[in-house]
Image (cartoon, rainbow, N blue to C red):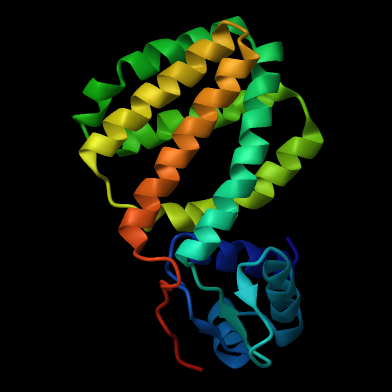
Length: 220
């Protein structure tokens, strides 16, 4: 693997997991020494991250991890709704029955799963995302969703694991799965839209008023 690719992978993972929180300055000397690479591949990695909107290179020579704000969340979810409702429609049209039957059984058992913690539930949601990605069979739509999910992964870390909201989310996902199984494209899209709007409302309640910014400033 090229040094720039390795640096990109490491930095992106750290940004998504908030180990490099919003506002962190990615100083070239510090990061190149930490990652064991020269400045040229580091700059290439930061350029790629900037193209994805995860790093801001307009504040000076060093990149800065971009902020997460309620206004940004709203914009992200506007795009997410457009993409994921269409993905749900296509999944309903082209789905593999056995895959979604298994998911229906698992989401029906989600309340018991949540009693054991959230990790298993989030894995189940990931399986649903993967199943929809496969079923929709549209590489261009998948590429757009993949680019968006990095931002969404950061945004999710703003939300607290509210047991009531998680139970609601499980029921919403079950409805989406059932609609896909029934080949009901309209219901699959509508159920997805409702789920996303409730998820956004939960995130905004956690993040605070529009105009606020979630940011932890780093040092140069």
